[in-house]
Structures are given as C-alpha cells and as structure tokens.
Image (cartoon, rainbow, N blue to C red):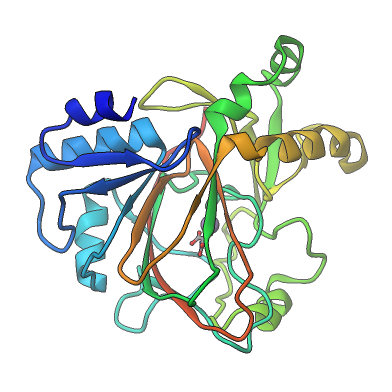
Length: 289
Ligand code: OGA
Ligand code: MN
C-alpha cells in the first residue's frame, strides 16, 4: 500500500503511520508558498489518509494562515480568543498548573455549529518531554463496520449537537476557568446553541459515507435524552475502537492537518506539571448532508 500510494505522488512522499488512517508527509516546506501541483497532492494525501502530519516546519502565525487559506475561508472561534495580533490563530497553552486540557475527549471540531469546520491545523510550538499525543479515528471505518441493520436504523436520524461537551454539567465559562489558560468569549447572542446533523454523513469530496458522531452529540432529534442515550452511547463508544485509530507523537515543529468531516480526535492529558503550546487554525466547512 505504502509503496503504491508513494509512487502515485510526484512532489511529496507519504508514510502511513497506522492501518486505519494517518500519514506523515515529507518533501514539503509549509513555511513557503506552495505550487498548485504540490497543493493538489497534499489535498489528495489528506483525502486518502484523513489526517496528515508534517515534521520540522518553521511556522509563524502568518505562514500557517497562508497555508490554511489554500483550503478555504479561515474560521474564527466563537468561544475562545485568538492571539492578540492574530485573532484567527488560537494558542492552546496548557500550563503546568492546568488540570484539564483542550480537546480531551473524542470529538470533531465545531460540530455544534450549522457549518462545522472542514479541517483543523495544529502546529507544535512546545511539547512535553513525553505525553501530549493526539489520537485520531477514521469515521468511514466506524460506519462501514456497523451491521446492515444498524446502518438502516440510523440512516435518517440526526444528532443534536451542543457546544458544551456532554461530560460537563457546568457552564462553559466555569469549565474553562478550571481547565485551560485561555480567554473565553461570550458567543454572539444570535449564534445557534445547537445544530442537528445527520448521523450518517456523506463526504462532499470523496462521496463516501461516515459515522458523524462525537462528544458534542447530546441526544437525537425528536427524541428525549433518555430515549437517545443507549444509541448515542453505543455509537460514540463504537466510533473509536482501537482498530479505527492512530496516535501521533508530537515534536516541536510538527504540524497536523485533519479532515473534520470524516474523523474524530482526542488530546491525551498525560503530562501533569509540563507545558504544551500549540497554534491552531481552522478552515470553514459546509452544511453536512
Ligand atoms: C483542537 C484539539 C487536540 C490537541 O485543537 O481542536 O482538539 O491535541 N486539539 O491539542
Ligand atoms: Mn478539536
């Protein structure tokens, strides 16, 4: 597989890191403007591997934004303040004193929004000596491995997605104050607090179906939370079985770019008393169908 897909690329090399998804890409310097042919290969590598990783990238907020703009409009986070000079770049700074982390459950980004993020880029500015890895899961595989009966059952069901992750009963501001050293914002009052999205999502570029579930799905449309819970919990647990996942070990200068339309991810909180600083840029997506 690796040899086959490598030989199909002219400008980059891909090295898969797991059976389910994920590839390291070499032969490209993201700090510079990229030729259209190179960008086309990176797009193909993303669609084939779902999440791609680049090592030793000398990024700045400007360079990240320039690379991200190749994929669409840049998304501004409704709840979290960006860097002072770069409102579209978030600095995720988990300090030694922070108990909780950002992204520490299985989820896909901005699923609570009517148009969730297409993709997210994360660049490692400072990483712990060990720990702080990120897990990713392949939602095509999660869908395809369901029984025909379950596929039929959920084919027309929509999940109700809420901004706060389900494990917390506390308000967003209270949770964030106790967790991460980041400035939280009041979202605009007209911003919808929840969105309904199909549990079975068709990828607009590959045409493949995937299971569209994550920590933001609190219940199912037209059902009570109690009625929804068994199915939501089953699908959530199923979606990140080990054989659907990969695990990325960060180094300073690593950049990950994942497709939120067919993956989930999970930031492991296993580095107490150490600092981890990441820069994050998110690309806008479209309405799931
Ligand atoms: C995110 C996120 C994961 C990580 O930026 O959306 O979930 O490993 N981050 O920091
Ligand atoms: Mn995330």
